[in-house]
Length: 162
Length: 180
Image (tube, rainbow over all chains, first blue to last red):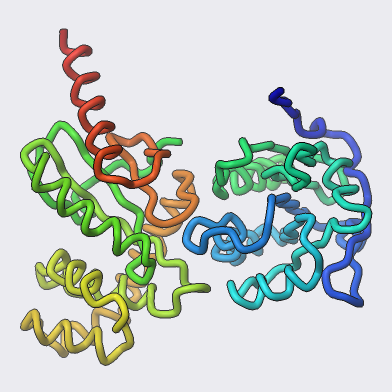
């Protein structure tokens, strides 16, 4: 049975969470209050090198910085896997470990793929006030690319100017 | 996903100017998959040469491929002297050797004006061109390298010869139908 998931609704409060980024460091969504936050849920570390979604976001961090946006990757891999992955791919943003209890935060964001026990490929933009500004759940095999996030960031900053 | 910046004179294009099918690749000179795709595109051009225009745009993944950006700049610098495709081919054929000295030796092989090449490779104009290529790819939904577009629409299957051939045939067929 195929489950069709919808992202959390625009304008609703983004569920807060605390997740480990290293064996002894934890990051909470509320740490970034006042800044736009991009959450990228993804199925697993160590995807093919040249087609990896985290790799792509890593390459456009300077674009995201123009909007003062914070980039966070989230998967159910443990912190050691995240560390090895980040080191190998030279990633410059935190990878959060939704490992214990497994997938708890992914579920809060409607982004847990029960069948395979991994996070969906989903993207969220959370605004400065901690509300969902944009969300997208991609078919699990398809890397959504970064255009949607950039558009959402533009819309958000445009809305702010008005 | 659609190509946001249409193919123009600013692009490096190979093949027939008014070909019915335009294939655009966003590629990274240091990416092994792009090297593989390079051979496939060569085959494709042999088979569908008179119906195909091929355009290469830069998508260097600098964080994982430390030589990719400079290799892209080298191809662009060679392009300033009319030898983009020659450099493009040399780089893909020697993908394991892409440090500064290697790139310089390829420029010498191609009998480029070396002083000019050295100047161009670090020029603002070329760096901007490569960066603009990259961002135009991001905005067109490039999600890895290589990513292909056939007449402006992203090709989402894997880049195998028979799949590309089929997609090209379908595009040609669709054009015929529209004409009728």
